Image (cartoon, rainbow, N blue to C red):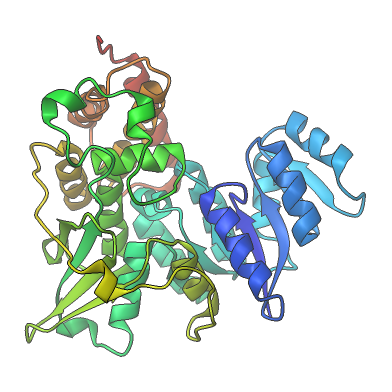
Length: 383
């Protein structure tokens, strides 16, 4: 029996995790949930899963939830509550699905508490890959990937020697604007950017998919998860989102994992590994699909993907700065403070200004993150 805590339970990954757990009550139990400010969603989740502990981002949200749920449920808030959920003694498995850099601290705390990690928060490894992987080794903790691309690679590598791998290929949908001209993209609105053609995701991740910064973060995450050099990691645009990623071996053989674009598949695999359980839902019909297409991304069209490769190779504090600047720039775009192309302008300018710290401590990473956020907010972009 896996007893599960979910960090980010009301988001897309959190909701899908609860769907997977609900389908297999003999194998899983939800014991703790942490969310932001979506009170109605949390109340519904508490009634459905009956956890022992929950946490909300603010005291106000926590009080609203407390009035709606059974008094036996412990309700906390803020960073203290988030860490309590991450380290809950009743759980042995933590799904880390908080969006953004705020996932690093609770995920580290869960690792130090000896919990197996199902990782959907890519920023944890983007910001603190060296620290997180070192602490995981020291505590003998498994980090199992939930992102569909990393889950695909993880499955392709089962039973294979890492020394036999020539390269890994991460596939990308191309996002909301994959068929738009650069001129049209420059006039894109938040509403248009949020219309992803294949996946149902949160706002921030959907914008990152459009800019392909999301894929860039996944490249950095793959480097740490699979101990691969950046020269061994490639990206291909695959509009159908059926091939979730591929591995090429030294003899020229390729392995790929295929499936419908349904996040419940990689979530369930991370929860059941090394076993597989039945999963209801749409099944892949290759005959009906007919054909699959792949092409290389244009780095002049998607400069943030190049920035991510460069940041990963630079290492140190640079990936944390890349991530923080992007989080602020995306927020500013969603609030209609800047145009769409202002995202890449802000990120590029912050990276140029940053003085790299080669081997940062956790505190120095947070300081670099804070500096990057302030810098990204100060940069003026005219509509």
